[in-house]
Amino acid sequence: GSLVRTKRDTTGNLLYTEMNSAPSQRWSMQVPAEVSATAGEAAVLPCTFTHPHRHYDGPLTAIWRAGEPFAGPQVFRCAAARGSELCQTALSLHGRFRLLGNPRRNDLTLRIERLALADDSRYFCRVEFAGDVHDRYESRQGVRLRVTAAPRIVNISVLPGPGHAFHALCTAEGEPPPALAWSGPALGNGSAATRSPGHDHGHQVTAELPALAHDGRYTCTASNSLGRAEASVYLFRFHGASGASATALLLGALGLKALLLFGQSETSPVWVVSQLSPVHRPQAQESSYENLNQMSPRGPPAAVCSP
Image 1 (cartoon, rainbow, N blue to C red):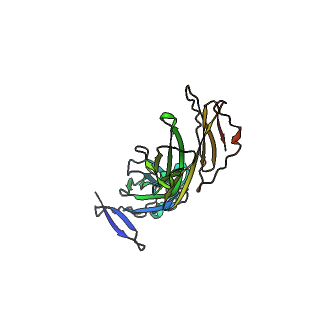
Image 2: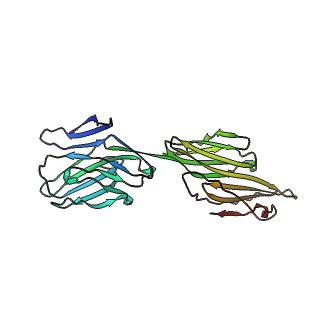
Image 3: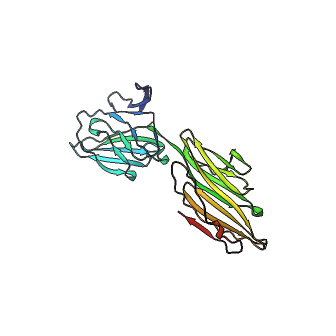
């Protein structure tokens, strides 16, 4: 069996110390309860251990897992030969995981580079002895890595509805999860958005603007304690002398320029859809749209995207 003791370090952070309950077996592992870091930066996950095999210099393997102990996927693994202090890396997920500690000196501290929100998880350190001694020990509590991030809008889209109406969807990610708001014609500034059930996943949230009733610019704003981001869609309707009409949607999502034309006639509507791959930057930038006077409501519908 094993037991877990908790205490706080000199800065007040909670530490887990796990040890084997049998007095003759002095395996133990110490990790912090939680580490916080910002997306795009690096995080250090401390892990130290003790073991009952005095002066052990045989082969050893150091392992880190994510998600759950013993069964979780490995994100890092290295092996040291007998008598060697060099732990040769055998696995480093996406090349971003690196051992800072020296397993020969009971230190398995790990560094994760270029953090992403997907790295937010619980991590577990493990050491294995081979050769003359076959023994192993793994942290059961692990260390919780919390990744924080300023908001980033990952998608903004406009979809047709009944009666040639339109509604808009905005999806953003961040940690803490960002609050979303739409603003635009007849909405005022900072109009609350309607959360879309079934669209929120982990660090992502989606909000719907049920109706784009007026021509003009509609802006989705995502904000949390670390910052804010914006993306806009522009709606214009053009009417020809024959009664035919065309609706132009201009999407400016973090530097992307896209022009979508929805052609409508009295017989049947024609929809032209352009798939967007937005370029994301920390802050939204205004997009300017020019040369729209070449559009003719009698001409065929078209979709134009410019980077």
